Image 1 (cartoon, rainbow, N blue to C red):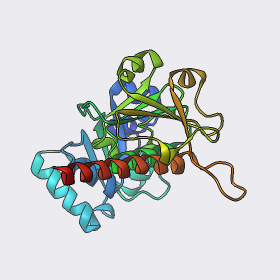
Image 2: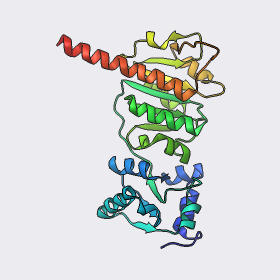
Image 3: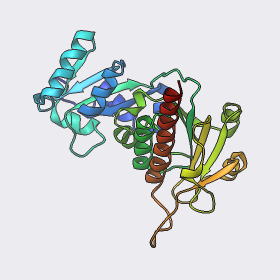
Amino acid sequence: MITSTTNRKVKYVRSLYRRPVRHREGRFAVEGVRVIEEMVEAGQEPVFFFCTETGVANPRAQALVEVLASLGTEVVPVSEEVMLFMADTKTPQGILAVAAFPQIEPVEPELSLILDGVRDPGNLGTILRTAEAAGVGGVVTLRGTVDVFSPKVVRGGMGAHFRLPILADRSWEEVEGALEQRQILLADAAGGTLYDQVDWTVPTALIVGGEAHGAGRKARGFAAERVTIPMQGSADSLNVAVATSVMLFEAARQGRAASLAAEDGG
């Protein structure tokens, strides 16, 4: 059992909370039973796996340990003090993994999501979780957006990182070619086409801007059309994660309706 916070592996985990180190190493820390379960179910094995006696008292955590041991993963027991030192959360669940950045082969998506300047990690995590649930084929985060592999984003994503193709920290120049031959929509607080009046069944890229200032000038130049969610009462806008969810699930609804119509026609 590791009992010292000066242990080399323990210090390595702490170093991964710094964005430059994560991207240099191509690895990030993953906390909690649910997210690590999702990682393993998606077929990704941890680079390192740490647990405490209290952590493995949870039957789900114990089942994870057994699965990883059968795969040949090194399971490293640590003291409660060491886990608290390594964890990003104030009350860790007693299990923590180090994972390599997922390499998920992107396909040509019918619907892709581009995030421009979303800075709140909780919002980004929720957006990734929603994007996967709504059937988005790929997500791009532009420079100026919070790091997709930061601990709070990973927790909020609830395993979406291991199933959703994500291109992180890109420039508009890197994205531009992928936007050809598709409808480019920009989420806007007001003045655009109502979101449920848009045809989401054609290949589409939805651009969503940041919480404070919205999307940048380049995004507005790329977009052919702005899309708006109508507001009632005194509210003038929605939280960015909520607004993105509304639009993505409208796209999913239209896609299901089109599939059913095609089946009935056949």
